[in-house]
Image 1 (cartoon, rainbow, N blue to C red):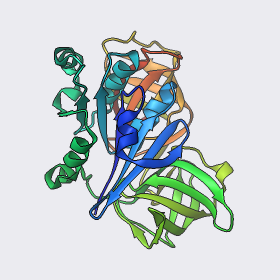
Image 2: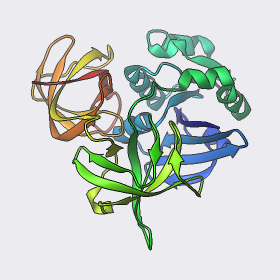
Image 3: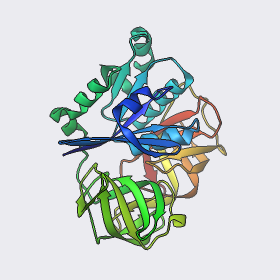
Image 4: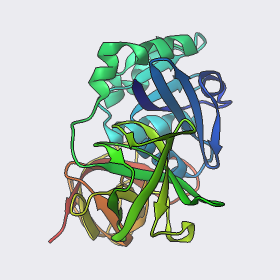
Length: 315
């Protein structure tokens, strides 16, 4: 069974997103679902102009699809944010009305130049990700279980339920794990996938998890369920950054969003040079070796993407 969470970025009316999947969770992020005999795909798209919605949508997905319909500031910002994220694989869907030469100029200086270009057609998107070779290229390296939380709520007679994707490893019922970055212990009471109870969930499978030991008020989007000792927690970090050439460079004392997965706290710039920024964060974050951060300004409108790079502990 193929499991994927696929991001849809750059759309104005979300037409492709609506054709790809059935309605799921909707807030500042929209999730839609499509399933068949050999696949369960989840599609995610930001539904707010807040830059944190864009950053968290990028953090939620396994692979991005960028829609080139109109040359808007929102499309440009999505391209810059995805470039900072450095996905190894991605897709560009081009409308017949979009100038291909302009598209080439937009993505040429970025990592998106290596994305596969497809027509703006839901069948072409589905066929691409159902291809065995393409799917195999998206599977992450194995490791201890890691489930970032994107939504959570209380269910009567069930308790606290968290939604997320198993980014690596295998999640099993009655497993004791830690809730990061807080460090509190939680018990996985039950797991659902596609509204069916399951005993285990595998890498890239989207799940709803009933948790004992935590209440919804204790949770934030970006919390991670993982094994004890498998993640680093810090409130001071460094980012080995590549700057966006279209952004004004930050300076010491600036407050910027530092997005790591689904976590997007504000960080104060303590020190920086041409390739490194050190941040003091408003709250701790949890991360693995080689995780990337996207750094963005806290302003209301584009351009906001400062750059991206690998997260490094300090001290």
